[in-house]
Image 1 (cartoon, rainbow, N blue to C red):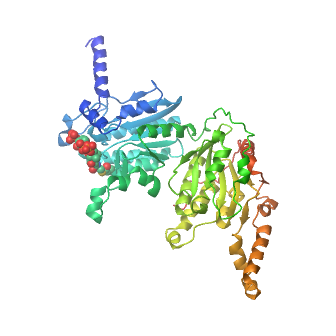
Image 2 (image 1 turned 180 degrees about the vertical axis):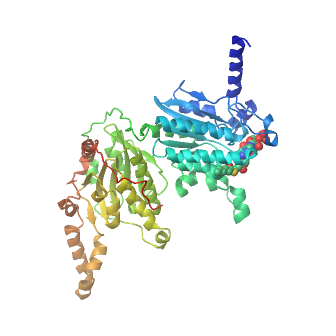
Image 3 (image 1 turned 90 degrees about the vertical axis):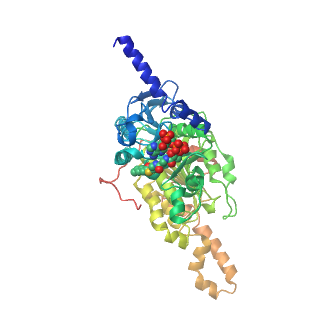
Length: 516
Ligand code: HXC
């Protein structure tokens, strides 16, 4: 074959590979309102930055006549590219080829980019849209999945891993996204479940739709499996890009700084009045967060799951931070099973990737009751405690109002190796609220009193003055300073600057045993 003919052969094969499962399949994908794998990659990466690998790879299956059903690239597009100039490895399952079902070959392609990501310290992004294990390949498909799972686990805490779910993701296939750091789904388009509605109907006689059982809204409100329910594919892609901007490339790097045009000394006078005089009245902690971070931009994670705790990324003076905050506007910001798990997972992620954590505290305690106790609020609440205590990242805490009992201890208190702890003058830091405390302390006195109600009210006032304030903690150095709310932004920025070189360790061990 002449050199020219060889070049022509390459062009032909390349064109064939770019076609995936063919025009008819691609038209069907478009008709369903979805994008193809290649269109998703084009939307995600900087123009012209995509380097494709294994475009000519073929499956090796001879069962069920599969030797006649071959497509170059075999149902997945993999490679390397850049997002806002920063390198990523990625794969996108190609639904036009046998519904993107996973063959041994396809798994090898995924594993290759995962290995490259791990070795080179580059994030790995998976765009999932697949009918699951390629049935004709049997055990080879299962082996392939498990090879991917192993790499997900080994990469965990080494490079950020992000999963976009753009179509079906069912059966054991869900475990690869579940092992990654963040999952983004598209409303009314993607679904994740272990067993679908048909099996649920057969086994449990329960009627449920795909969307109800495993749609984006369910997973972002009920199960907490998913971090963001996108309105459409473009929204999902944008979320992934924005998310990456807060993260470092790997565990040995710091997140990238961005130029900051928001003055570091900017005051937020509205914060001086945000705490209501009535201690049981609510306010929105997100208003506090937005008033202090750069340009009011807060990138929230798991917004609709356990909204009694708020987590997400933001920047102070251009530096990326993770934010954890009790939300008094939802269930009074109480800690429960779901909010503890949500907070713990987020803190651990930040700790993996050198992202300082700022914690805003206004928490009345842990939610009492049989439902919580039966569900293991002890074990689950301990996760948050564990996450804060083991973390070695810079940590700053601001108590805005309540910090009672065990919840005081858990919410990044000084005793959990937090570096700088501030309180607003409205801080109420005590073993419990005044009402509960005087009922225990003065039960006998109230019985003997002429007017028990007035007696208890007086004792409550006394307790509030003497104990339910930030100064008892400040006297002991558990609070480093009581700050004016309006100055919170500047104080946090100063605190972060003072601890940005922090080097802390935990005792040498294989790994801890977080109460799972
Ligand atoms: C092989 C598959 C396939 C699969 C679909 N196809 N899924 N081929 N293995 N898993 C093929 C179809 O036969 C069809 O080929 C083409 O892909 C397009 O599929 P359609 O059904 O026409 O598309 P659509 O109507 O859009 O439906 C998509 C689908 C459906 C919802 C994904 O195909 C489906 O339910 N597939 C089976 C899903 C499944 O049961 N997978 C195994 C799960 S168990 P032709 O040539 O006819 O057009 C699992 C275990 C993993 O994954 C365990 C890991 C540890």
